[in-house]
Length: 205
Image 1 (cartoon, helix red, strand yellow):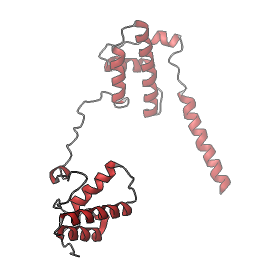
Image 2 (cartoon, rainbow, N blue to C red; image 1 turned 120 degrees about the horizontal axis):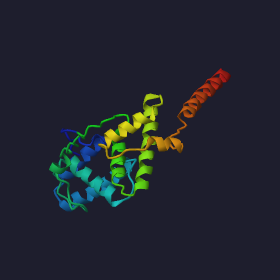
Image 3 (tube, rainbow, N blue to C red; image 1 turned 90 degrees about the vertical axis):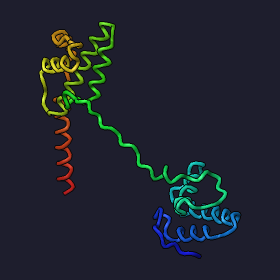
Image 4 (cartoon, rainbow, N blue to C red; image 1 turned 135 degrees about the vertical axis):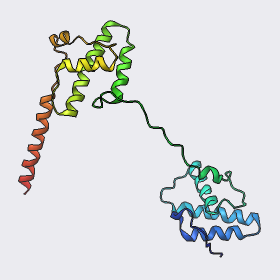
């Protein structure tokens, strides 16, 4: 068997597989090379712990065989040989979003919701959407800053983000109790959970 002195490709298969591939390449008869290649692929299946029977995985193993052979292997493969230019091609860089977020506490998703609310034509549904956004912004503000915020501040920020296209009726919403959130009780519940955890640790000690 001819031992490969070159770079070890696909290290997960090890030096022995590399040497077998080198031997297959040295065989003169194409039929024999193909027979040995099929046996080697079966061996590669066995040493690959994540292999499952599927056409895609089978093609991957044959691709690996060609890569180990440095794309220089004349056999009758059940799949077309991969091209080095495609395998080694670097993926395109994903462009970073250059869109600035006016209030980071609320994130980009809130701005998308606001755009959807602006498109609502029905007056009642639009008012309901505005109140929903105010409640959501109050919750996000509390989670970010760990303190409550005045409804008028949130309404002003909503008008600002929407470019004046949304104008929630804070007075009406207050009168109907639509802006009341149970934020303090959530904080207290977290404190009770921490106290319970401390008591549990003391008991174990």
